[in-house]
Length: 100
Image 1 (cartoon, helix red, strand yellow):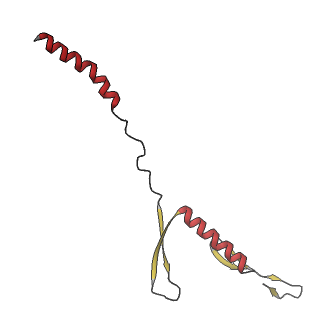
Image 2 (cartoon, helix red, strand yellow; image 1 turned 45 degrees about the vertical axis):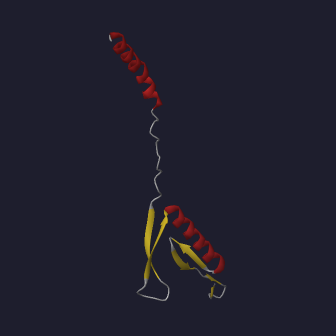
Image 3 (cartoon, helix red, strand yellow; image 1 turned 30 degrees about the vertical axis):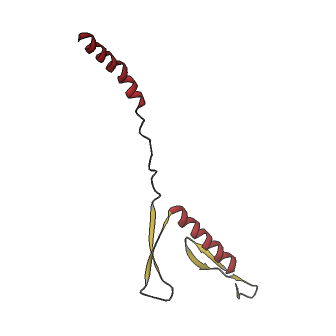
């Protein structure tokens, strides 16, 4: 009987490091953080009342604003975008008349 108890105790001592090594480490960043959304309330064109909420990440807002600025500067000569405001820029000819 003593032999059986000694053998069982020895088996537990030998097996315990094997069980601790088989335990899989917890994965770090298993769920990567979602990018933070920035929401704006925008007015619908043609209505003073109807508005909608538009949400994008900071990178998407930056890209959308850059595309809008480039389109304005390309298709509307004499108009620039400064600090997200549309500014009409005129040059003057020799007589002093504004030139678009």
